[in-house]
Length: 145
Length: 438
Image (cartoon, rainbow over the protein chains, first blue to last red):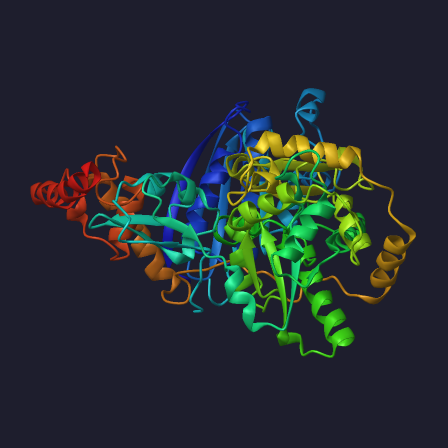
């Protein structure tokens, strides 16, 4: 078991497009200041941003937790929202349930979950209709962090 | 770790410790200790903001002087297109070029060819680039260094193509060593630069290779000499052996933030200038915005290279000259086209090695230790007033906390935490104020 070095949790407000992206920016700054290797940092930021946007777009509220160990970086996202009826379908590139309004803002092209999965070394997702969704993503650090 | 060289020096005898530079620095790379400014080299991106901010004129650019060129047997000027925007409407690039010859250069390079070659290569590269998007231009060394220091995850988005001035330097050496039977090191390829940042990119390229150029002379350093010759040159005669070279100086495109890439779709190409805006846009790119943009052309100086900090003319006056030159640009001659075609077919324009993020703690400390320092720095910050007064010598309380966590400063440098600090500052700055009254 890898030793946990850092754990930070962030509240995400559903529907607040004004602040959308701020949490992933904050995570980026933390990891950059820790001098996390660039390729890994990039993947974490992509996953965090997509996770944050999903909560903003669909849920009432959610929490994103960043966990850093000496071996990897994990992101845990839990939201209170409508849930995902068909996870396999949601993981297909281009599949989207976004409204026209969201698309007008440049979101909801059906790349969110597939993109998160693509950028993670471990990825799992659980959802309960009417209650919410939990996503777990892990990105391994290279040998020097 | 390689020691980093920078494009300017701080003259400590002139420095009055007034912290203008520290507050102006966009990457928080300056500290003022004992009334004198110091640089944290790893954080400096050579933007030159401090040069302009300094009220004591203690910071100067590291460029070379004409006298230093005497060691070379053949001296070639590669002039930034910005040079030609610095003089009056009726002073043609050809005349400015001849003034360079009068100043002691043996040749003025037909730089428009290299610019055209690189523009073509960029257009190809953008059209075939698999991602990640957007690609970011690499001609401004400040932008490259900003990415290395503050946006390490975006280094793969820097254009993997060498800059025109390097391509020019390589060809200068190749052509004249062949034609004149000289060794490449006997030929000086000197860039006439609008900023100190390009000077540093020659002394120490970001990709850690060696530059093909031998140095840079600031436009402001030779401005008066050129102006004098332009005033003297009433005849406007063009009987020069290098005539076609000099005229093609009028064929430049590079160096201002608009429309340099006619073959790229306007919809997917975004030019931007000014470090503040660039930082905002890079932040947004990291958040996944600007997905429809393929290519970002970034110049750290507002208005592009014509607004460089070693230029003389007001940016907008220079811009108007630039627009005038573009509007009256002659059609490329067949010789120009042929030279572009010949070199495009035979040369490789790709970057010699890849640009990597500048890491400063990874070599020394493992991740666990870095996390400990970070937590320590957060703890220290809680004790600080968060007023960012700068009297500790760091630009913000956050920076001071980090300096303390990394043992670069004492927490007691904060005036809110130590009474003796204010006495110490009084001693240092009393001296400064008397000197100023002289």
